[in-house]
Amino acid sequence: MRKRILAYSIYYYPEIASVAQIYTELFEALSDDFDITVICAVPCYTGEVSPKYREKRFYDEEHGGVRIIRVPVRSFSKTDKKSRILNILDFWRGARQATRQLGGDFDLVFTYSQPPILGGMLGVYGAKKVQAPLIYSIQDFNPEQTMVVGYAGGSLIHKIMMMLDKRSCRKSSCVIVPGRDLAETLKQRFVGKDAPHCEVINNWTDDKTIVPLSKDHPQVLAFRKQYGLDGKFVIMYSGNIGLYYDLESLVLVMGEFKDEEDVVFAFVGNGVMKALLEVYVEKNRLRNVLFIPYQSKEELVYSLNAADVHLVTNAKGIKGVSCPSKAYGVMATDVPMLAVLEEGSEVWCLVEESGCGICVHTGNYDEFRSVLHRVIDERQKFVEAHRGGRSYLDTYLTCELAVGKYKMLFNEIVQ
Image (cartoon, rainbow, N blue to C red):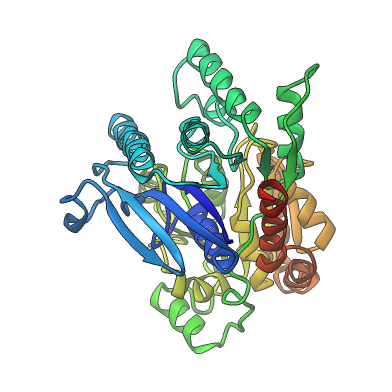
């Protein structure tokens, strides 16, 4: 008899969030072996909720062999903390109600660390309700992440958040993390005590769709022409323009290169920091810094390949707390990476092991400036010297390999 899995994922198909794509691909790949039910929010990642998802208490759908229970949430603004919190609380309440309504027997409960803290707590709640073991996947450690940027509350709130998330870890049969540095963070949380069982399983990109393409590929060329990139050396940041990437500081250094007319810094995506960056760019008349909208999953392969170099960053203090999944998409295209990270973080190690780019220490803006000069001055030499990402990914980081690890772990726990 096929084993049944109950999963929580605030964002799920057809959302553009990286975690939504990762878990959609994971559960659909596992649907041949397991009966999977996912409880998620109605599509809302952009902040808007379609009118068709404002009418019912729950929406019962199916996609890719996976049953999807969507719970309604309110619209929100990514720049309005209160509306964002209310949106998250809507999901928290609705997911608990959906769990009670589902009933039935499940052999395993899966959750991950979004919403912060509440994702783990939902898993604990669901596992207790259906009397099944829990697997907790931590994509981002909180309160550690919010403490880095001072996003949520003071020390008392952070202590409570830490206590609750450590409880979720203890209640789990296994905690999954996407990087070696995150495994060390989990261990440090439980110094002097038995840490929960931990498995490191990397994230991935859709490596069958995201592939290397030449700059004269018709759709790549069309993208470059559409956004004024044709004939330019393009240094691209693609993904969430959010709180945890230090982009507001890095763009100050980019501004020093405003006279490099054949160089473009392109930000592809959206996020809470985008408006701040746009104001700086407009005020300082940086004509070679561009903002390009999010690209659909179908178009992403063309936008990623339109870059000559990709910028992958994290803010200081994020080592061991979060792993920028955008790195896997960059490696899949074989476009070199300029990684502004903390030494020893997972992606720093991947860049060094694969030779797919160069690493710069987060917060060292003199080093960043120096490396930018080198990349721009030696552009062709730099690009040719750092084409190792795709080969490394095909050997160690494919979606198929990661899904196989999940399948093995799930079978071990539910046997």
